[in-house]
Image 1 (tube, rainbow, N blue to C red):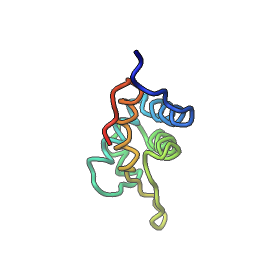
Image 2: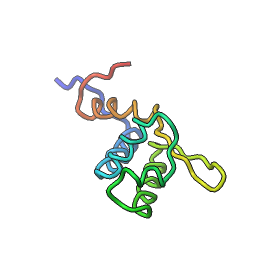
Image 3: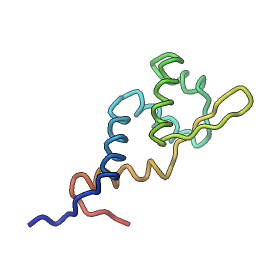
Image 4: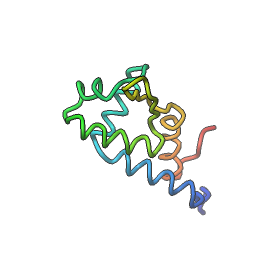
Length: 105
């Protein structure tokens, strides 16, 4: 007997896009850094901790922002990045849903 309900197509597409974005170790590290910082960070601050250069960090941040895993806001000439806590908290639920485990609400 199948107990779980099939995820609707729109939700499945969202989860797949998140998983694709998180399939890169640099993006996972950037998310981890932003989550641990508890404050907005500039690209330069992120580059200080990354093993890649500024253009690569900027590329990864663009992807994470497109997936709404990070938020960005302009501060003068700088752009500051923060993790989107709501999206990040949904990631375990996405993994649970895909694996057929019951969702905790």
